[in-house]
Length: 207
Image 1 (tube, rainbow, N blue to C red):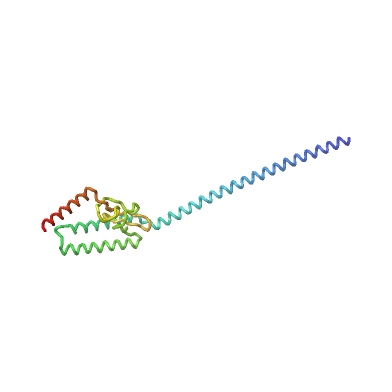
Image 2 (image 1 turned 180 degrees about the vertical axis):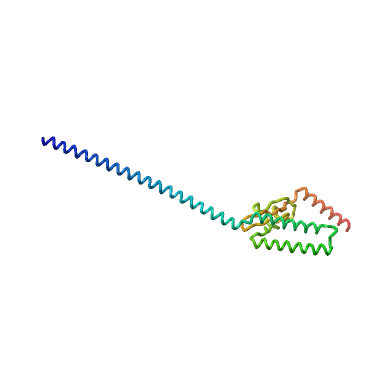
């Protein structure tokens, strides 16, 4: 009888132990599940914060660019006025009827004053002319429109400015349209040498 009671008591203890283990396992599983949920939430929060931070930086950059370059289109359009004044001056200076006249001199002087004033206003607004003549061609600043043979300049040197280029702060407003030097072709060199030889012979015959 005592054996049966002991067995029964032992069986109950085993059952309690198994239940306790199951309870502990369930509790551990819940804890692990809770930790996973917390990690997942932390990960989502970190990604959301990173996205908000990126948006904030983009907004700051756009705001700064709007402040610095808000007048970019207007500035580019304004350059057309400078071009037209330059063209008008060139046309007047090459008008045979007006050459050497007092009227031409006064008109050109006035145009020069207006052009200088406009360039000064542009400079005050961080728009500056690109210096090109005698500089090496830079594709970031210049656009080569033609090549000019030159014995004395290194090839790729800017020898003529067709249209002024401008920078707005660190941004290119428009490139300079330029002509660059190139070495004379062998045919041209031979022609020049022949011409020199003929000139020398002509001089020696005269002597």
